[in-house]
Image (cartoon, rainbow, N blue to C red):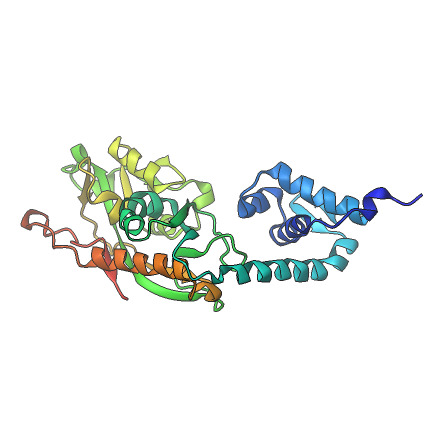
Length: 313
């Protein structure tokens, strides 16, 4: 008797999940990349395995590994996935300034800087809908997980259209009541990232300059670290856009050069001429240029760097 499941129609979504799991190797990483839960990934892959009638993955201690059958169908599955993406890209040719644009940026940049400055975009283009994903995970532009990305550091992919927006400046901050502590930067405990964030540039800077210092608080977001600094836990390395205007924080002197990070705007090449995406990208460039041109700090704050970033457009 033939297997009824084997005669079912192939679901392209199952193929997409199969390719993603082959790429990311764990359910959790795949779920984060596709913005779904673990159960959805598992169910989709199981559906494809039921259709082909054989396992495509072995569950290992460090994740999922392709079986020989999985390896045999991976190239075809990738080709199918790319074909589906190509069809969707052709739907992006609308000339109207309306529709959804997905923007991704780090959480602190998204919540501590961008959101407050997107009101002008809405007034200028009220028919454009914005989905802002503020997260530390890297969404893929090439796989349509986002349309525009703001990323720190020189872009590694030559397949993306990139524009340098400027250089983000950082400072060392403490609670206002700790501002006058003698040698605060040398004596107070440090606030930093949790163990999963040790590869982040800010975490590496802290470890390099405070190698033997006690970490009184660790958190996976700079908003949490700023809150810990306000609560008096110690010294936090924070971007100026997040801390300079906080009346409960004070910047303290540092004997070593402070961290600076280049910020880049990335767009998929096929989207650069799509009006709604272009409009959002151009608006973001304006936002950072305006920040660069803001008036200098008042005389009493002249020792502090007056701008949150240096523009290099």
